[in-house]
Length: 137
Image 1: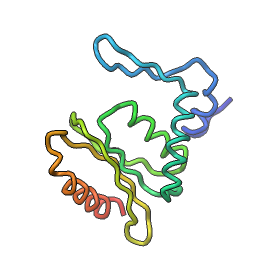
Image 2: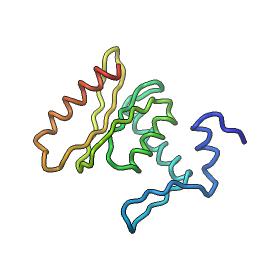
Image 3: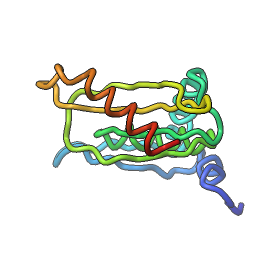
Image 4: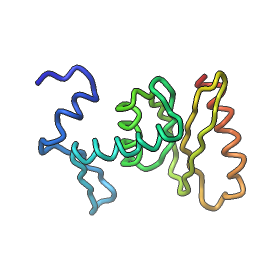
């Protein structure tokens, strides 16, 4: 079967014994099959759409966990949402923000910051809101 899109590739390989292996440490690996990835992506997509995300919207993916990043990326791709990955340094607390940008576009962002710096939570959200408006719309 010929795949013409990334979504078709994932959908057509749901039952094949293929997987992504996440290396968590020197002694720990986690295997996620394409079928599991597809199911997880559709679950995340459901929640994004419930928040108002639509085909063509942009989704900032700002996560320090590779597995969550891949799940979020595929959720966006499966829904026709444009994934916008941002680099993250090793951080420990994650959050999310969704708001309506100019012209009614829904913008969602995930962020992370050091747990010891919880006082910057509001500042982080404000900075991300500005980045979303300035760079994505």
